[in-house]
Structures are given as C-alpha cells and as structure tokens.
Image 1 (cartoon, one colour):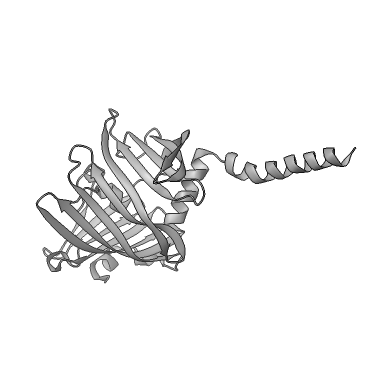
Image 2: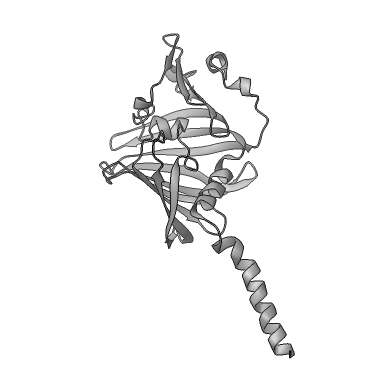
Length: 252
C-alpha cells in the first residue's frame, strides 16, 4: 500500500470521527442537549419581564428556582402590589400563593393556556408543566439559518396522552453551541399562536446562552412580552423540601 492510499484512508477516518458526533444525533438528542444548556440539573435566576403594548408597558420582577423538570418555584418581587405572589410546580401539582388574600390555590391543567400575569406567556410557559424533551416526539425537518447562525429546524409533536397545551412546536437550535434561537407554537388545528425569539447571547452563570426571550402573539404582532435574565446560576444544590407549599409562602 503506497503513502497516498494510506493518507487518503487516514483523511477519511478523521472526517468520519469528526462528523459522526454531529450528524449521528437524533432530533431528541439535539433538543435534550439544548434544553440542558438552558436549565442544567438545577438553576436559579433573577429576571425582568416587560409586557409591551401599543400604549403602555409594565415591568415585573421575578426570581425562580428549578430542579429537573418536576420541581420549580417562581416568585414575583415587583411591583409592590404583586410582591410575594408565588407559583409552585411539584411533580404534576401546580399551586399559586396570593398573599394579598392569604390564599393558596391549586391550579388545574385547564388553566395552563391562560395568560401568566397578564403577559403573552402562558402559565405552562413559565411554570413549565410539560417537558419539551419527555412529552413530545421529535423530528428533524431541515437545516436553516436563524439570526445569521446555522440551525436545525425540529418539529415537536405531542405524545399520546401527554399533558401538553400545544398541538405542535417548531424549534430552531443553533448547530455550533446548541443555542435555542426560535420557537413557534401551534394549536391543535395547526394555527400559529405564538412565536418566541431568543437573543442577546452572552455569558451568564458560566454559560453562553440567550438572555432575552420575546414572546409575540400571531394575532397581535404589535404587542409582545420580553423576559430579560439578569442573573443565573446552574447546577446548584437545592433540597427537595425547598419546593413546598410552606416555603412558597415565605421564600424571598
């Protein structure tokens, strides 16, 4: 065997080793990797939500904690009239603490499509009852370019009997760093309901991720809701007891 043949075979082997990890991935693996990058095994964050309408804007301060896909706690810190309002997800149970009336309300699944705090996000978007990894079948559709970045376009179709509110989701994931760039949410009849654009990519909490999310309703494109992450921590120690109704009432 001459040197040219050896070199050619070596080049082919190198290319195979380099490209198998990327092109051998399934759509589910891509979604899982992108989701893990945004959430980690656990996380905490501080953010500002801006509800933008043609003639007014409202800002809401938020703190949140999450552990896996089964436990999360969201606390409203501003404005003053809403300070202390909290939302708890624990396994399949969803709770809302309203300090102004000193009442805990258990939220039924039927409420998940309702507007969250008057925004363009739904209760499901913020409390994350459903999992984009576990509750959907995933299908690679095509390669595309989003925000000047090469990306995968992936269809998420709900599994039978999955506790989800959307009929279909289209996810656009950047190829190089598995960044979530765009999501399109459709109802059961296939009509586009919301588009979420993720941008302002920067290092926060030791990870390079999008730090701004914009939710834009298809029927009202002149309005939107922005969530801007100001602080994030990943893979932190959070005891399961943190996600309790008692703690929901007193967390700050």
